[in-house]
Length: 313
Ligand SMILES: NC(=O)c1ccc[n+]([C@@H]2O[C@H](COP(=O)([O-])OP(=O)(O)OC[C@H]3O[C@@H](n4cnc5c(N)ncnc54)[C@H](OP(=O)(O)O)[C@@H]3O)[C@@H](O)[C@H]2O)c1
Image (cartoon, rainbow, N blue to C red):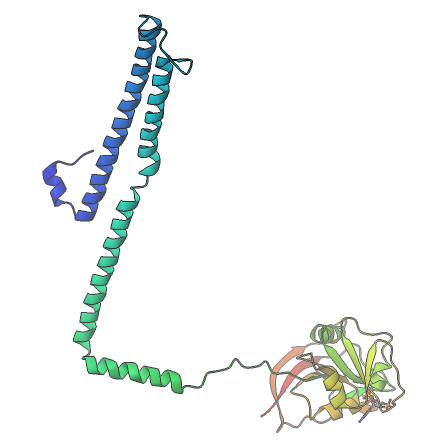
């Protein structure tokens, strides 16, 4: 549908340009279509002239009848016309898009100038300069914050009765499967540091954990485990681990008290006859940050609570 001339002048200039372009395209396509029809009719006409009326019979170019050459030449010009309409100016042409971009840029510049004027009206120039200087000063005087290096956390993990009992005759005095499960979950993938006596209570190495055994015996050997002779050495051996665990027994927990950041203690709510004990947890040094009660049931003869202690700073 085309607008009347009067209506067109009322449209905004950008839309008007689009309309003008669309109109030109329609005319171009119409011309191309007419060219095609004339080409077909003309070709048939040439053939008739030659074959039916005998016009120009015997006139050949390079051994080909004149009308074939004429039709081929015309076909070539038609192809050029076709390309011109459908390929070269199908996308509104480069010139047109360049003009559109230039217009947009000019419009943006105009808007920026208007904004600047608004800002100048709101803040006097001196105030703006002052604000800019303040901002730069603040940026440069502020120390660049370095991302904090993740801190290595040393955790002791134990289960103890109400009287701090840990075990008797080099063995535990209870069987709490859920506590074992939790121990496995927490320590898997980490280094576990233990005394020689605790190590010897294991029937085999615990899977997916690096074992570090502390002993005074310099000749002591433990297959599949790292043997060290002090807590410091043990922690050094686990240096790549951001969360090594000290897993007992009594002597090693006592030694580990000064190194640990956290204690994961399962408090079994019963008093046991024992020969090994967990050291006293000084409330001035340690704070409970989490606790979770587990009641007794058919698999757990005693109720217990998981306590997480964090060293106070
Ligand atoms: N309830 C729990 O959570 C839990 C956890 C672990 C163990 N336990 C129990 O605790 C008991 C074992 O504990 P424990 O206190 O008798 O033994 P332990 O702490 O496992 O191991 C003691 C051994 O560590 C070595 N050691 C200790 N201090 C050392 C030092 N300063 N430098 C170098 N090496 C040192 C010594 O090994 P050498 O003699 O070879 O020199 C010492 O005999 C068992 O009953 C076990 O079942 C309970």
